[in-house]
Length: 222
Image (cartoon, rainbow, N blue to C red; front, side):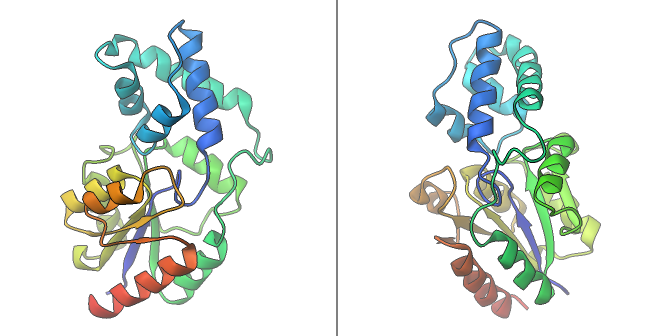
């Protein structure tokens, strides 16, 4: 059975924080609410849009749909396919080549919508690199395990041969709830100690280090 690696997108494959922060602050301002800080926004990256907005709004969640719609509008107005606002992290492209050559099934599980994910993959010429794409508008978002289970079903994989890679505690929680292995990455938006506390088996500081962790794991998971 081929191993399955499910990557988070924002903060793991792509450094999208600048777009996310600017769009979220603009969305709050458009409904005359005090924009959240950049740090507060980074802390909810990984959740679905509606869940992230609800957390940032606190108990006053009645405006969630308005802010979420304003966020979508803001992202459309502030980026084009070639503007470079969301660069991929160092080592990602070469690392995906290595994993593909080694026979891994590669997928994405993200809090993005499918439209937003497709835009990101197109921008970086990564369309077709992944055999399963799981988004929070088509399944329950993180930290629920649903996207892991859907990815396994779509690829014919096995839970014991599935690993989740991400930069957020929500990725680690999703993997733990599903019973999958989790590896954290240190180049994203959540602290390393928090990733370990939520179940990361190990945390990679570079993509080459992640490749070593995955190689070691797959050799013992047969």
